[in-house]
Amino acid sequence: MKKLYWIFALLLLFFVGDRIGGYLLHQLTVKSQFRYSRMYQGKAASDILLIGNSRGLTFYQPYIEEITGKKTFNLSYNGMPINLAKLLVQDYLALYEKPALAIIDVTMCDRLNEPLISGFSLYSPYSENLSKYLIDSLPTTGYAGLLSHLYRYNSEVFQRSLFYLNKSDEDWLLDRTINEHLIQDVGNQEPKIDVMPFELAELQATINLLEAAGVKVQLVISPYYPPYVDRLTNLPVMKAKIEKATGKKVKDYAKGITDVKAFGDYQHLNKYGSKRYLDQLQQDGILPK
Image 1 (cartoon, rainbow, N blue to C red):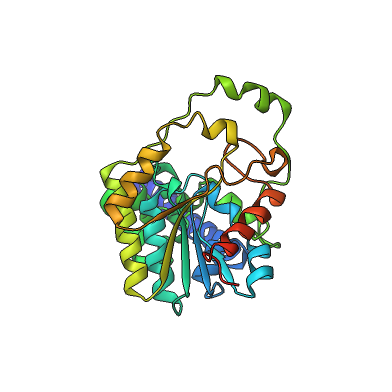
Image 2: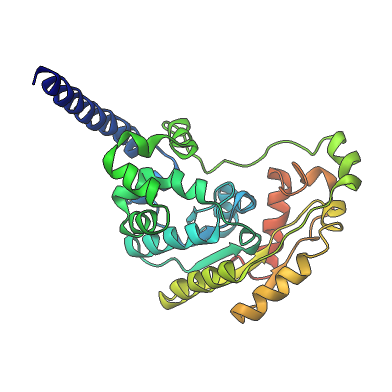
C-alpha cells in the first residue's frame, strides 16, 4: 500500500509540475512578438497576406509597407508545407477582417513536413483546426500534447518564439551575399522540385478559402540564383501542373533577378534583392501602388 502512495504521489507531482511548466511557457509564447503568437493574440490584422516557405520571407515586409502604404502579415516559415499553410489561413480568416490581397509563392508546394506541423502544437490550444489535424493525422503528437502540456513546447518553433520575445520578426531575411564557394559549386548541384496531387489539392483548397472570403489571390515563383535555376529543369513542369490544377496563372520570376549581389544563397534573395523583386511585383500590378 505504501508503494502505491508513492506512485500516486509521483504521478501527482508529474501532473502538477507539467501544468505549471506548461503555463509558464505558455505565458512566454503569449508575450512573444513571433508572428504566429501575434496572430493568435489578435495583433496581425493586414491588408496583404503573404504565404510561403523560407522563400516566402523574400516578401520583405518593411519594404512592402514602405512602397504600398499597406499593412502586411507573413505566414511563411522555413520548410512550411501547404497543408500547414492552409490551416493557418483558415485561422487567420476566422480571426480577422479579410485582407485585400494574398500572395502565395507556389514553390512551397514541393514537400510534406510533418515534423514542422508537430512543432506548431504549441498553438493548438488556440486553433481547433490545428488541434484536430494533430489528433487525426499525427496522433502521437496530438495526444501527447493533451497528456503533457510541456510536450507542446519541445520544438524549434517554440525556440523561435523565445528568440522573438522582445523584438519584431518582420526583419527575418538574409542580409548576406552569396559566397564564392556556392558560386563555384553550382555546377555540381542537381536540384529537383515537383508537386504531388495532395499538395495541388491543398493549394486549391487554400485558394478557395481565400477567394470565398473575397481575397484576391496572386500566385508567384520568387527568384532563384540564375545558374541554379538553369539546373532546376523541372520547375516549368511544376508550374504547368499548378496552373492546370488551379486554373490560375502563376507569375514566374524564377529568372527575374540576375544580379549576383541580390542573393544570399541559391534559393533566397537577400534584402537588396528582395527590394528589387518587390519593385518588379509592384510594376507588374501584383503589389498595389
